[in-house]
Amino acid sequence: MSGTAELTFRPLGAHSSGLAIATAQLLARPEAGVTQLMIQALTQNVRLTLDGTTPTTALGFQIKAGDPPVIFPLAVGGQERVIQEAATASLQYQYGGF
Image (cartoon, rainbow, N blue to C red; front, side, top):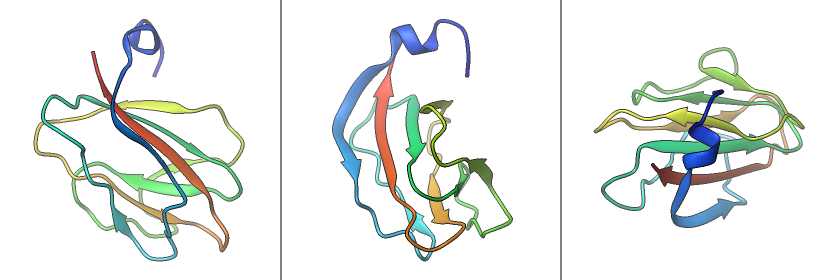
C-alpha cells in the first residue's frame, strides 16, 4: 500500500511473531477499531487471505520473504488467515488503525 497510510499507522495490540503457520492460521484481531494489518515474511514466502478463506501454498496474497512490511486495509468483520509456502517460514505482524 502506498501513500500516506504508512504515516498514519497507529499500532493496536501487541506485535506478534513466531506463529506456527505450517497449517492455515487465523490471526486474532486485538480490539475494535482495527483498520490495518502490517505484515512481513522473513524466511519463506507466506500466503494471506483477508476474508476468512483458507489460504494454501497457491491461494492468497503472496508476501515474499525479505520484502519490506506491507500494510493491508481491513474490512469490518474480516478474518485474516496465513500459511507458509515452504517449511520454516517466519512471520511478523502488527494490527493498527488510523
